[in-house]
Length: 332
Image (tube, rainbow, N blue to C red; front, side):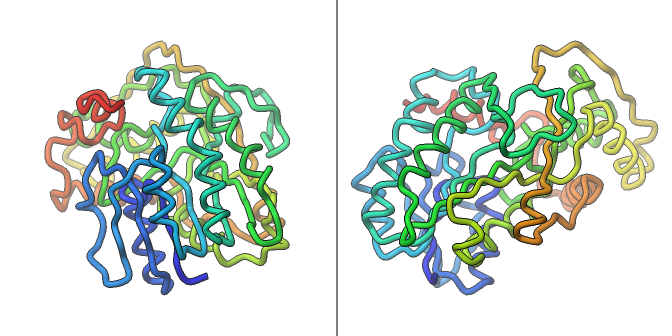
């Protein structure tokens, strides 16, 4: 495969993924609504940036022409999207999904990688949540993520290899930064307030570094079809309670910014009861893949970005929070 289309390629993960694809020698098409602009993407002769809505099938079909592989990430992302209009989440995260898959297959795409989410598991007391675990959606986001998975596999064929990934909560620095993800939120508050507020605390949350997960997306284009066709893989690394995550953040930030110590941690009740311990044993045993970066690495990288002045008003600027931007733009 030589040419890859990335939906949502100008987003948080996309701005880390696209340079990796270019470095690997791919020609890349980014197809994105550009709600957050495209400033996080590099300028490159093998990169084409298309402003487009995945609900616009004609525009998508034109963009996917001549493409060998698709990495589908575009969506109204993360669980707080329940604050938005339900119709918006449904049309973007579900209704247009199968038509997009069909259009990709018709265009001659050889491999379609669907980025689902580990949040499809909702709440589980199981010590290890594997890919066979029942899906228990708690929000529109994880409901529609889960409902799309069987629709993709309807179209699996030797000529159209389909694979689903269920990544854990992503963390770490990106040129298109988000401060609405657990580790990133905690680090932002530790650095800028000297106070970490933990909502609940006992919930277990799996995490994965943004560099690790995007490296995997590149590799997914290269694995032999026999290993990935029709497969679903959990993609996580470290499973800890939210309270433990806060302790990790406190320790690293105090090391990086000793003048800010001691950083306080307070706990308050939460109505977000998502909790699950994701097992990524399958992807290691089947593909030999495992992450290389820890939560501490993610926090340290964010601290370095703060020191370098890469964020302006990270506490107040709504552009760092997906749902707030979508509300402000009045997306329909």
